[in-house]
Image 1 (tube, helix red, strand yellow):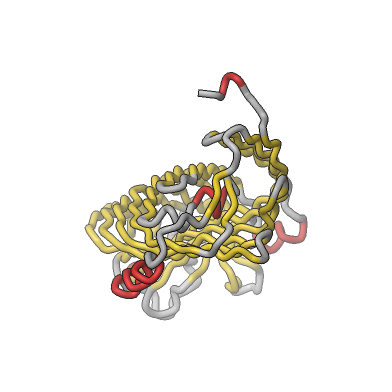
Image 2 (cartoon, one colour; image 1 turned 135 degrees about the vertical axis):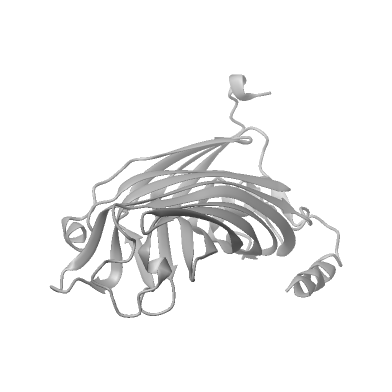
Length: 319
């Protein structure tokens, strides 16, 4: 995989001209739209304990502002559909994903805490949906992404529309991540009615995982008739984690391995004063736990429309 990425880099480096144009220095961007937050996780083990836990996370309206390297977006919480509450229960959501997209370096600060999950495609012995209002997951993380070819590909242009890509181009990235994942419930994560093939990970009650990950990635930006665009970035990597877990009313601690697959993608319009499109970001991290694994996925989807006020001046932000 690494050899493949370096081969792409050598082909891309055949031309050294810059492929994107930065927006006017004094540009105020105003965006509105819909946000789709998510925090799913899966428990995988031998036997019958493979379970996907999904929250009931409704779509939220959003409004955002951006000026130079400063941006702010606000979500307006909305109530879930009553029918979905019957199937998935209610989820209390705290979702703060701060992404500072730069032309060369990108910094991401993630805090998510979801409480209230349902077990996807699982039913109780009576045939009812399995809902776990006691189950919560919290993720805190810091990600750093560095482009090795910033003249060809800019995260700020690709995912924050702070400029325009006028010629297709790509770049290899190096990235790192540190953080904590905490999962806990009032009873074992796997329901007690599941007895066939039950294993150690099925009796897990609580866990804290501290990870340090490193890896590489590749992104490519395709302009479409100089006005629309498609962009995608794939990240792969791994590392170690330290986990403290409660199982059968006892506390244990281990070192184990972790790996991550990340995706950032977007499709939209970006020309002149107008921007708009659909954007999807997901980081899926898998940690080996006991005789199985836990996979957690931080998700952010966005449907947006924006307008650029070019030549705007905000004196207290002009520094």
